[in-house]
Length: 319
Image (cartoon, rainbow, N blue to C red; front, side, top):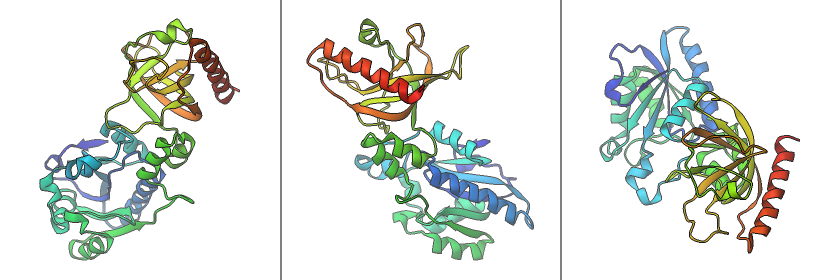
């Protein structure tokens, strides 16, 4: 999969393409269905026009982070994760538009001319039914459809799906904020996960008999509500890369211990005290919420709760 970080990087000899456009944050099932339909449309229009591939157009950073940063949504995926998921969904190329106020000022006609027609030589556009674009979101599917008549491309408008709640990035964020990792997984079509490099913590978990792999919550990132979860930890680098372990996962700031304020994802791999994970990149996936975050009055009370958490996680994950 080719990735172009600016529309000026798109090869001038690119053939006709099928284009899908969106933020694609989280690449939930709605996004995946749009990409699937784009591939189907590519096969259909390719019967009379050679198609050079399906191109996803996305933006980095999120437009709201530029236009109204105080209202910027927490991101479900980094741009690199988005690119990986777009590739897995079936796009051939991705154009990442570095969003700025200058680009925000483009009229819908400028976006169509400069991106879709001049850069991507579009033959078909496939977007969700609520798609808006251009300055002040003045462009919509009706405008795209009319422009297609002048520029020789067709529009495929994909109905929003999901149910009873329409799948959306906002819905996924809402689920995560409530600790509903099961609901988030249903919309994503996979377990919600976060990636990061394991840092050295205060080693309290090891002293208590539950050593944890600690990953800071990335600034501005969506994460499950503070609490304890059953999930999995996958090692992403080193000789055992790809190895997945069942884990009990704590998200939060350890309220039982005074002075701890950094929000972390702390994973205790069930029945393992020998793993050397400092400095390793890992992926932590969330399966089910066990309980909310609690401040315990004593270490003994905390140990009882942690033992119960591990037992429940084992039942869920191992049986």
